[in-house]
Amino acid sequence: MAHDTLSNAQMRDIAALIHPYTNPAAHGRTGAHMIESGEGVFVTDGDGKRYVEGMAGLWCCGLGFGDGELIAAAQEQLARLPYYHLFGGRTHEPAIELAERLKDLFPEPMGKVFYGSSGSEANDTQVKLIWYMNNALGRPEKKKIVSRKRGYHGVTLATASLTGLPLNHGSFDLPFDFVRHTRCPHHWREAHAGETEREFSARLAAELDAMIEAEGPETVAAFIAEPVMGAGGVIVPPEGYFAAIQPVLDRHDVALIADEVICGFGRTGNWFGTETMGMRPASASFAKQMTGGYVPLSAVAVNPAMAEAIEAEASRHPALGHGFTYGGHPLGCAVGVAAIDIYRRRDIVGHVRRIAPLFQQRLREAADHPLVGEARGIGLIGGLELSPDPARAATFAAPGKVGARLAQELLDHGVILRAIGDTLAFCPPMIITEDEVEMIFAPMQAALDATHAWAKAEGHLG
Ligand SMILES: Cc1ncc(COP(=O)(O)O)c(C=O)c1O
Image 1 (tube, rainbow, N blue to C red):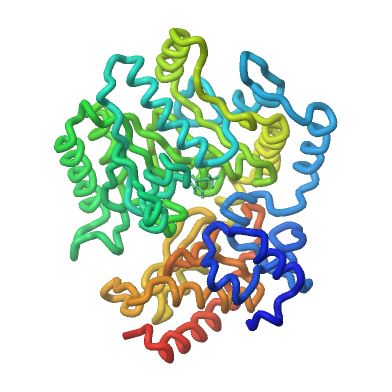
Image 2: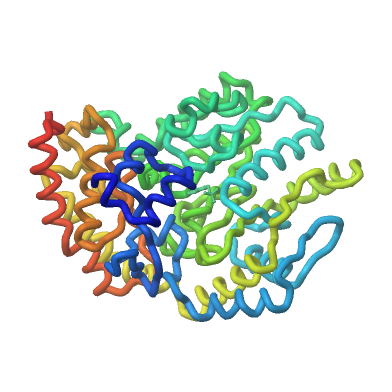
């Protein structure tokens, strides 16, 4: 699009905003895509065109857009108490209620909850609390955290370091050296020829064991993992993965941190990815669907032993020296309580289980296309990885271009999905109906064909 075709709003946007995860040079040419309203699984743009929001925004609007109950809960809370904090021993009812619900719902016994406003703040807090606890326990050397390549844990200095993606490190002087990245648990890409998923899981566990041994177990504090990797390209771990990893962590007294920021609250067909993947975490991070994405809020839950050690240490200081102005914001907590009540009352987890087979089947049908390397997913999350030579799991010489083209083709057909490199990510609102699932996949063949033809013409297929 030439510059003189940009609207006034697009010109103002270019002049005023630095956009996250956006290429500024390209953005300056094409201008922003204005989204004006949303209803159910649909959003409408500035030209009045309606789209199926196949990503639930950024993996967060599990109840879709315009949910009357969430809006009413927010309005009531704004009218009653629009702001208060939890510093210095203050509290409010929504913060207590939401913490109680999280403790009740989470499959592992959790002692206490600490709030932030974003997934990054939650995982940053995880790092700080683990360090704080290990100082309290008299093991100040035990501070390293193991993460996985392609894991996504946020963008603050500490959490971008945990994130195992080069884009989040380059030119930022990251990662910090308390982090070690271990192999991505992606069977299609990383397994040896003929290696079963279980064998691959055993190898990953052995590699983790060797890494911890080489670092010195007395220096390794925690292992952080998403139950299913999201922003790194939607990677479902191989069979038996966490069952193989857990004994390694236990042997070296390394805490497992579950990053439930995407998987939490029904996405994988259980309340938490922890259940779906059989994890036994010592602590967990929640955000996104906790409030249906309507209000920024995150939470960290720690098990009773961690809570006790942290509070004992904080009691030796004048106070716990950590806290965010908006952590536990009453608006977020009230909407979080309402969202959990809706998930329960409308049986959203049951709905995800009922609709997931159709969604996964339609996703996997796309795998027959010559441009598709792998179709993968679980529950209502999926990934379609493109490849110039699927049989060899080859990657494109110019990564990201073909994926972006497919996302654009689908956008033209009225479907919003996100290209993560050359993997198309799917994460529709959990309220999606069968007909709406069909709306996502109906244009897939045509979009893949058009992208294939374009990729061939542009020389991306080698
Ligand atoms: C698993 C996971 N953890 C943490 C984050 C960071 O959350 P935020 O963007 O709210 O800081 C994300 C964001 O996508 C995520 O997917």
